[in-house]
Image (cartoon, rainbow, N blue to C red; front, side, top):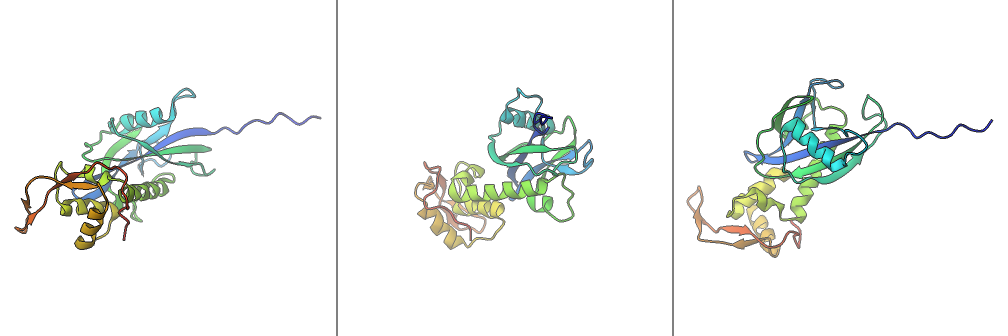
Length: 231
């Protein structure tokens, strides 16, 4: 007898979203509380399945972000694809993850299958006692690492500052995202060595300790050369 025709496996396609922002000088991630099984009540990244074979993947990511957290107009970039066979108890699910790192994001509003949505400090989200659904801990770790690398190689950090800022205020952004303490002198030297990263602007401003500090604004470059390497 001839062999039966090969049938491709049934694979579901989903999207997951790593949305990061700074709140109170700490890096926060957007998480939702799952309102349905599996992992009912666990924290998870916003996301879900594509509606049908005609839906664009990035469009699905934006739809899920709007439906589960009430957020829109966020710049998304592809992060990675996750497709281990046992990552979802409902069957073979491949997820395309997207990353957004943006300042001044509003409070989320839960909807659809999310029982709640909120910002959580990244260190709390990744703490051993935090129950995260699926393989979302791994996706969060990958997203945070990508965000930290973006601050090394791009001028993204200036977006989290006011229109004019001090070197110390810019340093606070790096410390929050990298989760390290930086030496002010070394940081100043690296910032000044990254050509076009920041430019002087306006008169000096008094700092909380009473000393005057020079003001800067974002420079014309988007890619830093040399990069702001982490310690």
